[in-house]
Figure (cartoon, rainbow, N blue to C red):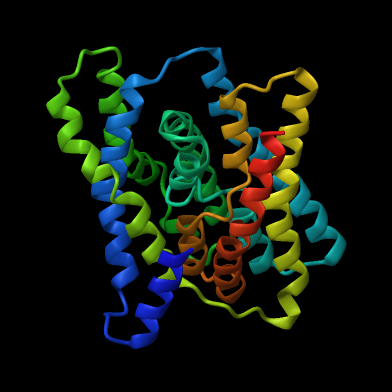
Length: 294
């Protein structure tokens, strides 16, 4: 939280360029996150449980979409609001915020599960599902092509490092490998938190309050609660399932918000949901940890 306040304060000083947050985010995408993936994924113990972690975000996506469309019909939301919520409500900040939070609350050994959830779930969902939403709701939908989607996926640095890490699975890696990458991976948390603070926008239009509440409730409470109850009913209480629920409870994804804003899908609503989602997460995520560790 202190680092978020620091980022917010740095922006208030007006001494840093307006694109500081974008630069920090690029550092995370191209340096910190790939290093973290390369450190943690090769040591993962693959099992059928990991399949559950990879599939859960897609199930949560379908549930979230159904709820958003139901509320959209009930409250007769406009096209822009529906498109914005279809991007924001199903997709969580499972990478920039999720991975550091998993490490902080569950330990370094659980980071691999978070990476699996993020790469097979959130990342692919953003690339595939996000593009579909933009194709339907954005003003320039004709610019989105299947080849463009594939190109984005295979050229995304964390995905490239994820594939490389899978190739290193069970390889006896030298200590020098970890000595080089581990310090780089540790830059993820401070850089991300400062960038998040720099991007906070705390304004909500009165006419959008209802959609604001529905969107954040679906993302941070309803979807993870459904996952939690499903695992509980099946008697699944291993750490991997707890991390899966925890990742499902993350606030809206910043990248999804950026896409919505670029497509002019209720940009003020999206900015407010991203900002307040992050702030609220410092209350809701510890509560989820408490529930999951009961």
